[in-house]
Figure 1 (cartoon, rainbow, N blue to C red):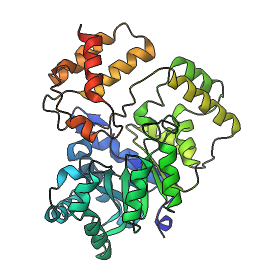
Figure 2: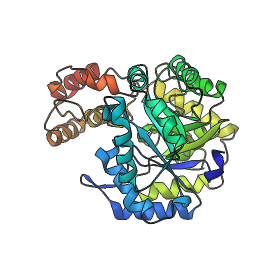
Figure 3: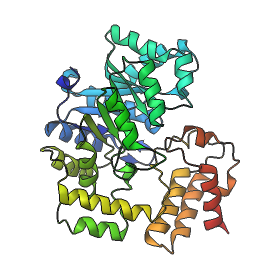
Length: 370
């Protein structure tokens, strides 16, 4: 029943839309939406906190106000930092409907579920509220997005067997990563019989901009783009209903849709190449930040954490002698530096990758400020 409304297994993730300054480039997004639908895709994903609320408004401006409701599938999420008690949830949900310009969501996901925030959802009866919204016709399907251990996922799916879909971070770099445990999380969802929605298939762009040694591996295939190998890797697993890509310009849209129009899983030669790229990444010790920016909203010092980590990774990737200059550019724009961290820990409490951010900021300060 879920699959009846979805055309193809590739979706438009609206967390990294094209920007002009701090505003969404609505004209470009309109063209991207048009092209996406024109090529036969219809799944869109957003959340209330994406781009400080601008993502939902872009959905209304670029999609829902321009196309009949039956032409697209829309997913939104209930995020823990926007409600404190059960009574807050329905007003927030109605606000999300208005922001997106729709009268129902096809999927409504409990956002970024983990052992840290799951008790809050249970205390506030968030799942029960979502199931009630489904009975009222305001939600078609209730699911979760998830960032934690397979054991935690097993607990949630055991507590709430009515959950209809599980969205997980899944890519070839995280597949065997002991922190993310993508493979074990995937297998847990499959054991419970849940269809999967894949997020971060290119790990926030890190699997597009590769180390030179890794790039040569894919170049030797004389085939598709770096993104194509990453997205097709994720899409080739049994039970995967949808793979999301956060496309931020028309070139990415054209590339991604070109190889997902007539999808083919990786062949044996391509899988061997991916395994070699995995090996190369393991030797580099990059910071596995996906630039989701969940950490920055509550930082009391306004530290541009993902941007600082990007400069650290750039130095490891390119041995860039000029990386200190770019570090200063990032910090000057934010008005704070890595050394300004007061070690409050709010960033670590919300980080989907469970990074030791305070330690990493201290290392960045040592690298660039001394």
